[in-house]
Picture (cartoon, helix red, strand yellow):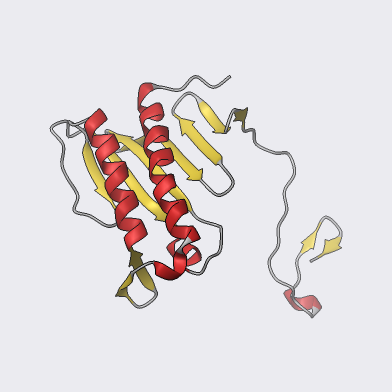
Length: 170
């Protein structure tokens, strides 16, 4: 059973709250307003709304922490050793094209080291979380390093571009 810290619980609550807005926008993607920041880099009203929700949740729970997010100004908190790092809509291009592979990413930095983080995929209701000394989790399932590995380099047609992997050419 996972033993969440208070900060991890705050992050989870913020992500779940913001996900409701993102799912609503995703289901009405044709109505969403989008602005190009630069070629191939977009921000949508969904990004901005989700960031606002997350910011309100995190900073109301921990007002002395700093803030660093993709779409807004960085804030140095009263406690210069701690800050939230947020991407409210990681995978904006997928989101804007109706591809259901995007997530909310939130981390907590303490003394320049990431000590906790979550990635929440609202479409699949998958919550990846990790905290220093507490391991990594997918929902309530502890994640472990696998003994197996898959390496894929290309679908090369000729032998020169393939790789020998234990007697098998790929």
